[in-house]
Image (cartoon, rainbow, N blue to C red; front, top):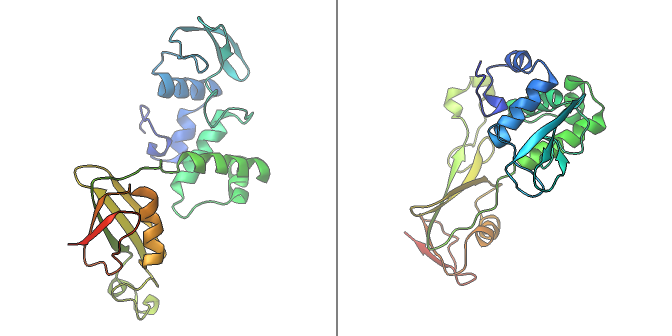
Length: 231
């Protein structure tokens, strides 16, 4: 078990996570260390000097030495305004990130013993946190696509699907990749690689006036002053 882990998903198992977070106090201390490295910062004014004023059933509370406001470790996080114990939040985050195909609010409700409404609320907050931050690309940008999925020849004969060669999306997922030369990388799954699908994504993330280099992409056209060049 990685007790110094910075990510809940880094625990080797759910059992290890539950064993480590044996109390709400441990959960609070973990979150405080993760947020402030054990040096609380006021979420209201940013002052770096605060002190513990009391410990309630819901855990520690701090008071800012500057603005005098009181706060908990939850303020300014997805746990704010939630009465759900942090331990249940941590278990929920672990379960959500452990299920590659996702988990329903009904299943999550059963797993952490809450109502379906509460589980839905938790799911929405966690999913919002994991949304990729918007990014933009400029200057010289390269764009290409690939197809992710196992090869049919590696499957059992009874599970093979015909007509899946090349760019078929029957058993593969097309992924669009955008890279800024000597810069950022962006990848997103798409339903297909037609211009009607690709161009709106490019308009959203690539700045006007950029040079976009593609590899034999037949949909290359001029739009919004972005120069597209087939390399």
